[in-house]
Image (cartoon, rainbow, N blue to C red; front, side):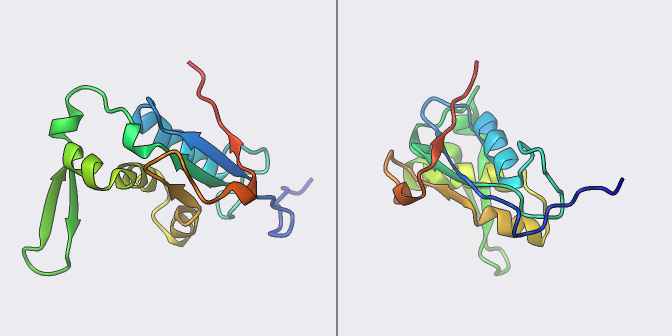
Length: 144
């Protein structure tokens, strides 16, 4: 019996809503990455976009454990010699809280063309409002 590989027309993409309020950053990012890759589906195929779209709201209320608020550092580079910039999690949360979640999720996706395509399906918003009501996202809850 041959292995079943779904075609692009058979893949159905849903929208999921994750609320970041009082959620630990890594656990939320893991859940988002699994949904983006499609590993929660029975027809998961590593080389196809079988995953769904993910909307994360309340990024500013994400929780970091331990002393990561002061100790965790985020780096970016301008492309010029000596152009590396360093920011703590506390400063990043104050200016661009959505970048914390984006960085964590992108680190869990494949580092290839498919990973870039999957990353485009992640939408992160600092507050509780998002412009994707027309897609009727299903709210995901976290079990304890």
